[in-house]
Image (tube, rainbow, N blue to C red; front, side):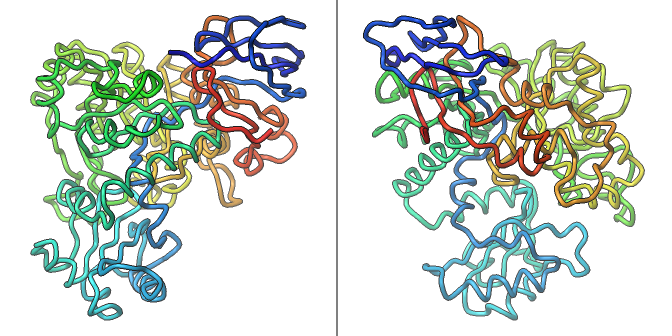
Length: 493
């Protein structure tokens, strides 16, 4: 069942004022003084109508939970993190204190259990890194979770298991938080997300039993849950079975299978051609989690089962492995992050039909770490303009909670490649505003008849916002209304 017909009167489209009729979940007509008997009418009073925005890579449960955790992202050392947590501890209920957002790549002191023990010896403390690839625990938390690491640091798969185990609330409350997070996304003009959370797809069916999410959700599949999806005969794009009501079924569909080739820059586990300066020989080039042959076998089998493919590859050696595996499997797909790419690999994205799913905020957040740890390869990091110029499809996301679930932040970061007043970092890889908006809108550049009525109404055109106030003003773009399939999911006018 689609939303009731809706007539948007007096919207700005490409500099002209028009009426837009939405019917059957799609844009039915665009013109002057449209008639639509029986349709609800919204007077947009000249608001700018654009295609709805998408976030192509989120971890919604982690984002919803991180919004309620202790933020330690501003800390510049392990000691500062411990101090922030100690100050916050009296105001946090429960016996487990969870922090989020540390970045230790440039710290003078490494994270260690004894640093947390000194400040919080009698309370279990777990701190999640900004990139979600490292967990740092004190002794009490290590005992609670059965972890035997002497330094209190766990990375990659072990860290992700701990993150999943660290939920401090029941499923019902966590589900409410996630649905609230989808509403917050809709308030920023988001109409769809790809959720790559480490969880069974059935979690989404349960949490939407009472109401649909505020955005379309493509629910990703991790290998641990793949057998159940295949046994159920589900293919990417299918509505999730058991979804309550036609609206929820339409918004809730199966997404891609997610596979990992490497780790992350922040944890120094991204798999790179050049060694990390000062790293021990065993980990000098990062961590290869899946090699070419095993990856290609998995891609081939999943593609045959009807699943879309999303491969996490951050370092340039990992990107090469991923592209080689896609080529061997004869399957299209996406590379998530692609933060460092060898020049010879850039044109392979378009040739192989591999989408670059990138997160521009990472480029501005990690520029200093990149200049230190990827000093030999910084000139091939976050090569967005090069990928577009080579004909690749580029889509934008946040990797929330690694960065805010806000497409305007992603667009501003892609356009300017700076966030702190410094000159743009490697400005040759900046995107034009038009290209960045298209990459944040599923490739749509304007509103056309016949397309899905996933739309956003803005107080001003982004080009005018950028011209008058710069990229920081672009991050604060005023969203007046958001529509998904013609249904209003956020309204401020």
